[in-house]
Length: 338
Length: 234
Image (cartoon, rainbow over all chains, first blue to last red; front, side, top):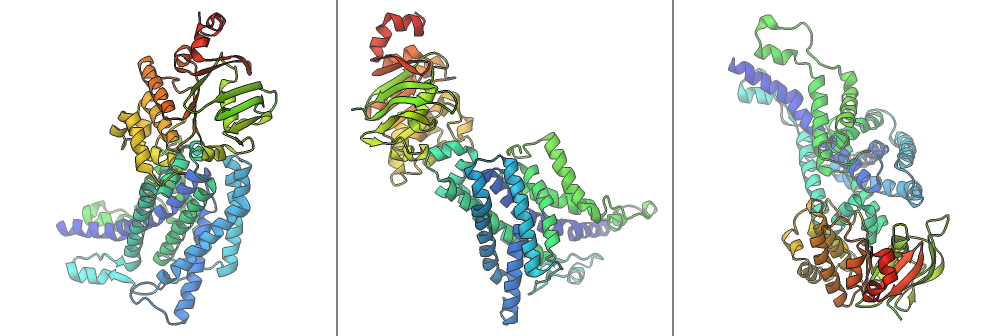
């Protein structure tokens, strides 16, 4: 019986907990960028998913180039070496799109809806650019050690029937996310520019009257958002695979995460990221095997005990989004109302 | 020659003029107060000095410089501190961070200026790690003025600073305004509480429908029977 529960726990950890943590960290990084742009520029940036795809695509191309030249980081993925160039490309694209598109609407003091629709335009352009650069197919670029703990290794270690595999990319995701989030919060809480960003987000007019230059603050917001987007994209790509369409689709869970946490609130984006990730992974997992360990055989079900088919996983983000907007529009951490 | 002069200002938010040939001046170390009935254009006159209301004619000068063409932000850099009537603190920032943002343009000696402000408003020092949004109305007003003073202004503009503040706090507050003026800053206030404000005013402006109706020393206005009966409730 104890073995049954242990096996069930391992099964749960292997298919829900560990993947959920990694996916949650990736969503959190993406949602942070969305929430930051909303806080400073006051619109929902629909181009965020494709900005993420662009930074990742550049990282992948540089990774392949490095691999072709025999460069490797040993156990770590080569993509980490290529990451700074991907980040730089995404930052450059974000700043150029701001200069060419969003700045005009800022000067004319356009409504947030106008900004949002303009960002849909930027989204389509980036969308096409990414497909043009790297194609529409799945790309795999992970190398280095695949597993820190393999399922078989875990079974031998513990003698349990079920194995717990921990991929190196999952651990890498968590480490990078923790470092990035810590750096972001340090920046926002401790540096003059970070405080100025928070002030600008809180009360734009008063910030201007205090001599804060909107241009500088906006540029910082794009730099940070593009950096976080590329980090999220590369980690997601290493963990799973890269496909432009998938990244476009990630916009939905990322927005849901930012809004359920309270848009404009960085802490909310992180909590929201994990909430959405665990809802998605938890509701699409088939619990049949897990239940077989903890309930008597006679209770065994014929079905998979899967609450929602994986094909419908985006409906979960959508439901979270709708419920938040209906029941608590400011989100969990009292963000702004869209 | 006053430090800040808005001379013969005509203008408004587009459409019909709100200000008609309105002149407001304040000099170093003075407290000047703009009073008048609702809709007299008091706040508009102040905002015109800051450049938040476009002027059709008239000029705005700070010391010897024409600042009429500068944006509000540029006027802040030139030495005008402004405390808006509402939304005048960063509610999600701590008291100290509010002051730091005020010092954004003059970063070099933050701690000495902050110390002066904590001396002026001791309660802010106690509450410096609290969020400004958690403070009472009177304390928020102190944060707002502290933030504006951090820009080291030559002129401080206060738009109805005692709106929604209790009478006891108000008296205390006017004492602080006098303290601020004594440091050599020119203070210009728009006030609803005309009587109390005129008591501390070196110079008072009574505006009616965007025009200067009476301009005199605060005490003289308080003693003027016409002003008393029409604007101060007898």
